[in-house]
Every structure is written in structure tokens, then in C-alpha cells.
Amino acid sequence: MENIYEELGVSRPVLEFADEILKGLEERFRQIDETAEYNQLKVIKAMQEARVSAECFQATSGYGYNDLGRDTLEQVYALTFHTEAALVRPQITCGTHALAVALSGNLRPGDELLSITGKPYDTLEEVIGIRPSCGSLAEYGVSYAQVDLLEDGSFDYEAIRAAIRPNTRLVEIQRSKGYQTRPTLSAKQIGEAIAFVKKINPQIICMVDNCYGEFVERIEPSDLGADMVVGSLIKNPGGGLAPIGGYIAGTKECVERCAYRLTSPGLGKEVGASLGVMQSFYQGLFLAPTVTAAALKGAIFAANVYEKLGFHVVPNATEERYDIIQAVEFGFPEGVISFCEGIQAAAPVDSYVTPEPWAMPGYDSDVIMAAGAFVQGSSIELSADGPIKPPYAVYFQGGLTWPHAKLGILKSLQRLYERGYVKLPDAILIYEPEG
Ligand SMILES: *Cc1c(COP(=O)(O)O)cnc(C)c1O
Image 1: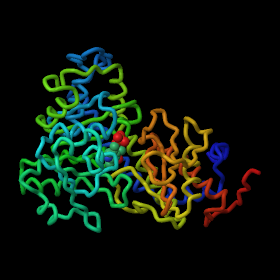
Image 2: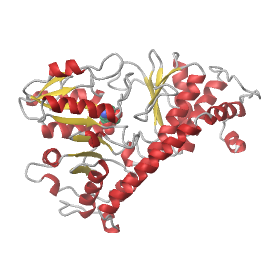
Image 3: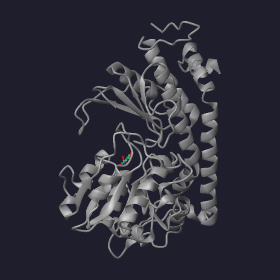
Image 4: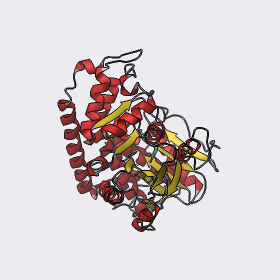
């Protein structure tokens, strides 16, 4: 084992340091495997109940009327998320699009949208019109209100009560912290907030941005009263195989309104050819519970490695996890760059390229991104990025298999170690970097 790691450029001190840390993670990894087992059974049960067959993988083209694969897959999602209905399609281009469809499908002029988890994910600012944007909800006369989370990351129930108005039609809850520093919310916390909102007005639609949270727990927000859960298939539920797509699972009424928005009034769910991607959607969902577990192990391993080395990590080494994102604050730019280089060097695809910070549109500082993915932009595959500005934090997520996630973290540590940015406390052998 050591030999092959050394062939891949991971030195003995790095391996030994990692092994020590891994010994302390056995019980946690066992619990993650148990959750994966439960969720794997949940998905298989859904596929059996929906009578998935080989015919479901056939490609359709044109209008896509009576597309058995598409309709059955939507039933599988509904059974998995315990909802009445679902919309799962390659025509939903990404998570932002799925969320935009869910919002614009269910809101009408004069309605108010209320976010109770503070500022929503960046790309939604333009969907809502928080940043003025062509075609935003604001342009269609939908107003927006927001209640921030409390200092400790919990819901501000008093402020929520005060913010709910007669025209509040939809409450948005973002499960994952995304790239903010607040804690991610558990399904249970979300369920409590939904119950609170419904008690004030049961007509309010509760929508959860479920991105990065799927299969991390045994229950989903849809088990606890959410009217819609929404996410991207190039994150957790696509299992790394879906090449595109998004999903909305929820009540029959809500999902139907989404379908009329996604395709056209009058057509709804009836059209939308599946174009040959169905097998990847099914097989990706089948793999999603164990893929999510792999990513989760990677995140926890990274948190433990870098916390032990004295860096601030969010979530910390021992915290309960509700999504797959890990942040490491280096405090200096070379830390972020070295980390991303290591992730890139561990990739199965494009491992030979060196990521560099650049001025990405929409960001106020240079950003470095590492990804060597089979599906472009996929963030269930091992990937990392960070803006080159204080506190010089890198955000890291994904890993289709645990050994790959582990290699990525070891390679990142190797870079930092070679360049003298970290000292390994228990190193026995001194590694001599090449050159
Ligand atoms: C990724 C993400 C989105 C948007 O998904 P895209 O597929 O990138 O458009 C929305 N919300 C959260 C919390 C996310 O993590």
C-alpha cells in the first residue's frame, strides 16, 4: 500500500500522519456506512415498487409522449423522497434552474417569497431579483422578504412570525450553508421550522433548497412536511453518473405547477423526451447513497487532518454533518493554492494540469478551482475552490469513492508539507522533495 501511495507522490510522513487520524475515525465511518446502507435500501425499495425495468432505459426523442423511463423515474424519486410526485428531467439544466422553476411555477404576481435562512445561494439573487436581473421574480411582481438566522445558526422564530404577511405564499429554506459560514441545518431543524410556519398559515408552501444534503441523513426534509425539495443531479442524487439534470419532489399540486412552468401551460409533464440519459439517472440514484457516504468521509477526514494541523475548519472535526461541504481556512493564499493543486493532482481526469487563480466573472477577487471530473462542473466529484482573499479559505466537496477522496486530501497535504507550510508532528522519516 505504501508503495503505491509513494508512486502517486504521497510520502511516508504524510501517510503516517493520515493513518493516525483515520484510526480515530473508525466509529464515525461505521455510522456513515450504516446511513448509506439504510438509504441504499430506501432507493432499491423505491425502484422495486415502481417496477423499474430494462425498458425504462430506452431513449425517446421528439415530444416524448408516454415516456415510460421518464415517468417511472419520477415515480422512483417520489417514492424515495416520500412525496406525492416528482419532476426529474434532463431539461432541468442545473440546481439553480430547478429552484427557479419551483419558485416561478408556484408564485404569482402580488405574492411574497420569504427566505427564513437569510440570504439565499448566490445564483438565486438574480432569480429572485435581489440583484436586479432580466426575467427575475421581481419583474413579475413577486416581492421578497428575508429573515436571517440567529447568531448560532438557528431559526429566528419571532422574526419569522413577524415577517409572515397575508400575501406570503412561499417560504424558502436552504438546507446547506453553501459557501457561507453558518452551520448547515439538519432535516429535523427544518421540519420544526416548517411546522412553525404551517401553524401560522397552513396555505404557505414550504420549499427546501436541498442541494448537497441528499442522503446525508436517513430522512429528508420532505419526510417532515416540506411541500417541495429541490436539487441538482450533478450533486448528490445523480451519484456522479447523471450528466445533467435537476429534480423537484413534492406535493402533486406543487409539482404540477412546476411542470407547467418548465414546459408549457397545457403540456406540463406530458412532454420532454429523455434522449438516452435515463440509465445514468437511474444508476446514479442507485449509487447516490454510497457516493454521498464517500464524499462525507472525505469531508470529515479533511476536517480532522487540517484541524489537527491547527487550521480553522468548518464544520469542525467532531461536529455532526448535514451536507458534504468542508471549508478549511488557511489564512494565507499559498495554502489555498497548494490545497487546490493537490486535489487536481489526485484526479482521474486532467491530473496533469495546474490550477491557477483567475479573475472569474461575478467575483470580486481572483478564484482558484480544482476539478478533474468526468462530468464538467460536477461537484459530487472531488473538487475544491477558493477565493484569493482573506480569510483564504478553501471549500472542498465530493469524491465518488472514499479512496479517491482520501488521495485528494493526502495530495493536498503533501503539497503543503513539501513547501514547508505545515509541519507534521509525528513524522518519523524526513521526506526529501524532488529537486
Ligand atoms: C449548488 C447549489 C445551488 C445551485 O445549483 P447549480 O447546479 O450550481 O445551479 C443552489 N443552492 C445551493 C445550496 C447549492 O449548493
